[in-house]
Image 1 (cartoon, rainbow, N blue to C red):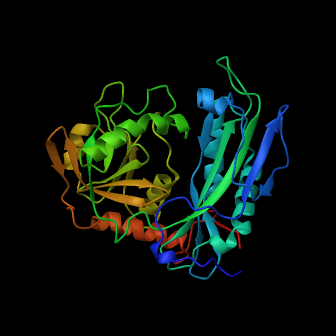
Image 2: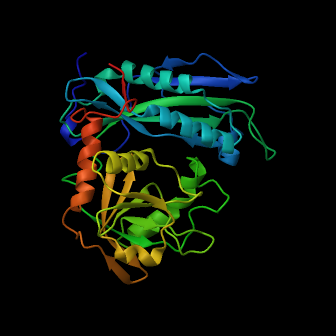
Image 3: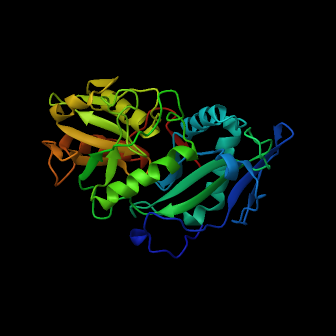
Length: 341
């Protein structure tokens, strides 16, 4: 299929309307068959559950063109499972895994001309999402829902390479101990917007959120999990019931242990031990790993030995190995790569 006439090497990380998207409706206790549509407009009642009580959840993954020319997605089964967890927590209907995967495949295939070519640095971002579509005025779940999948080509998250960033310790709490921090709910991101706008205004790239109960333990940022590299060359990542279980983080931990032979620990990370680490990074779908060079704790600077010029050497190995797996340059563990075309 002939590709769209786009300067793939110079597109940003933003939304671009593509040809097709997927929509399925939940009504009377069941999903319909779902279908592709060219209509990018959504029409809802003014009293829809998504507007009144923020009943919505979403996922994010990418389609890649591999070195041998195939179009693939990376571990989409885990996105399907995580969306089921989110839906259950928000009293929304479960999207069956087969339906989720079929929808992703249909939309990517239908928009094959929008999938950036290998080596361009760009990918096709995939956004499955669900929301309460029927009217509701009392505080209760909606009765009807829509599940949709849109795609948009995006450029690399970092132009000119992933330079280490400076982040700050936030005075705000991201999630309560028994709240919704472990699911990908739209409301989690809404409440983080003021904190991130404030951080940006103060010259910082992101926030480090501490646990709400004791404010002594590292949790995550507004949209990414932490990884730390010890001075002995091991990997440590925070464990908490109120952080989102990142698919990228889980994959990095596997790569660290099984490809690079590193010691991997998922455990509580107390903030007072952070200065002892050699490297720090934020991991997520968009950038894979964003290196952190400095954390500012209300004026007190924690500077990592890896510096502010480049990714730390071990973080770089993790990044290169994982992206190599995603792009087909390195053999993937069984089941990680889902070939679409």
